[in-house]
Image 1 (tube, rainbow, N blue to C red):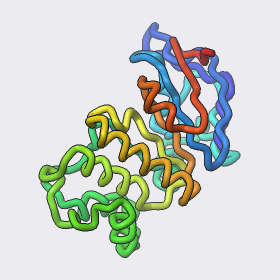
Image 2 (image 1 turned 45 degrees about the horizontal axis):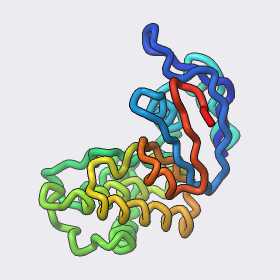
Image 3 (image 1 turned 180 degrees about the horizontal axis):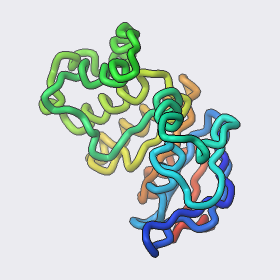
Length: 214
């Protein structure tokens, strides 16, 4: 489903990804693990069409997305990618329902009944009319996951999704991601620096200084 061929990326003189090649299967739950500054978040951004490599190919669903123009990249993200971030990126002045609804409004979709279904599946339907600012960290991350799921993405990219949570809330989020992977057949790529978090995935790829390590 996802193939990277000899991908390199620099910011100024700083080489972030260095001739990196990877393959990810459809429906896989994979962790990308490495220390801060290793290039793992840049790798996630390139797979998610938020950034482009300087060299190499990024192939998703048999499409070479690094050749896309900005409009094509935007459409690709809307159709295929769901994002989950460390700091949730919710609107605190909006309710849970309104936060999850945002991707539908941006895309002009009207599948409002899906919001209730997803909130129920993530056990936060009772928070539907609460404001994001009223929720615990674990609840906010569930809302962020619901927002990522609302358009039925093929791929969820999770960048340190447990990094702002206590250990118990973090375990719950990892359990939710594993369940999503199994029941919805969504490919999940999870970036982390924590081996305990990485071990939740089916496969771990270690990255250091922009290269794959053993």
